[in-house]
Image (cartoon, rainbow, N blue to C red; front, top):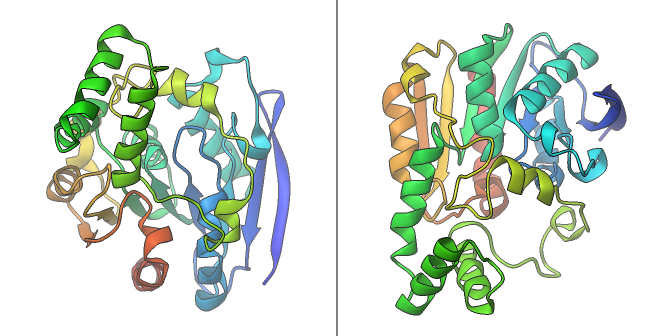
Length: 294
């Protein structure tokens, strides 16, 4: 399987990209937008075999501020405009005129804002994987799920939020338990190599843009809300989430109910990264969806 890597100049820095496979026939490339902000492309490598099995080019990249595009001490850059314009620049740089785009978590927010407010051309379909149409909605749903934790953990989280102090060991343990339930399992020696590989996470990008944790949208993305524009999305959209996901079935159904040409697939036993926890089903679904909308 052919893998090409490169860098695109952006804002005086370098954006790293990784292209897997080759274009064949009329199959349009799939561009992958990672979560975070600041989480890196690494986990998307579990989808590499989609390129081979479907004869389709996959394009993944580290958004500025993390991974091989790491930049720090630039809090002025950590906002949606920086990252959406980076996506537009990458499409131009790589000649990606017609594409499908998959956004997971923050990547899906980015994709929705791109579609709703930038009106891009050549978008064949959207894949909205474990994502959200509004920061307030995400915050409310996380607060609801915190109530499922043991009372002592709920108290530790409440105290940390009230004091704006996230250093208490009891809070750290409570947050770890919450993320274990709803985000992802521990990385072990049996995990795919791309998950075990050390990565340079963009902590500054995450805290500046989102906030101190998943349940406190307090950063530059705090006012993000495209709920009123979902009805205007013209492209076909596939909504995916897990039954135990940070993206709750309520959030997924909210998008599915309002995007006109949409389909919803629930991965009932998965958490926030369905493509990692049920890779075979996810790849099968991608093949079916992408070939339908090429």
